[in-house]
Image (cartoon, rainbow, N blue to C red; front, top):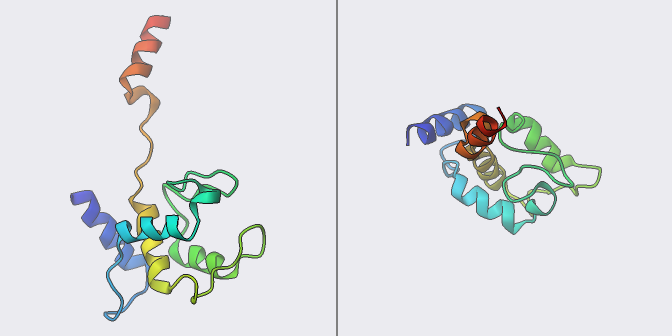
Length: 118
């Protein structure tokens, strides 16, 4: 829960929003990420595929929002009538909520394989 509060505090500092907007929600962001098809190129947790890796550690919010709105390559631009500013903030919250993969040496099966090879 502490990590969640830290993430939310970081989002509040990075993502400009006012009192009229809902607080950023990783849960809503995950739903929107899947609903609008982001997963089709960036995979289900933003780990990349045809499109680049978005998580963990997404680019700064302003850069992500600008790219989403003005994409001109393989990705179509998502205008505000398709993806609201609130939804972009929620997607950003979702991407920030995705944990980093564990280091290989912290995985018991990998540790045992390494020790068996010695």
